[in-house]
Length: 105
Image (cartoon, rainbow, N blue to C red; front, side, top):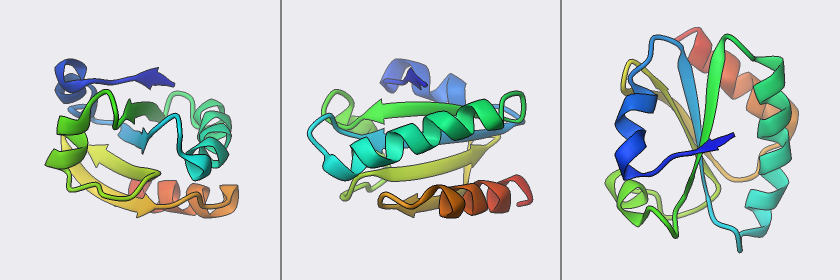
């Protein structure tokens, strides 16, 4: 998963395909649980969904802009607009269900 920052964020979210962005921090235990789940789903959804991550310690302006106060937080975008989101380290089946919901939004 490629890491985004304030400079690369706008271009990444303005796509026709679904974009999933994981807001995380290196020190966050639940983030370390969610990361491998997202990496697995990235392979599964290759060609349909783009996955990225944002380190909230390195890019706090992005976390602030989206009002993220708890991590991990996952936002899903289509054409620059948030179409779904969740907070916390969900199990793979729940993350897949959230992605499917966003794909059909």
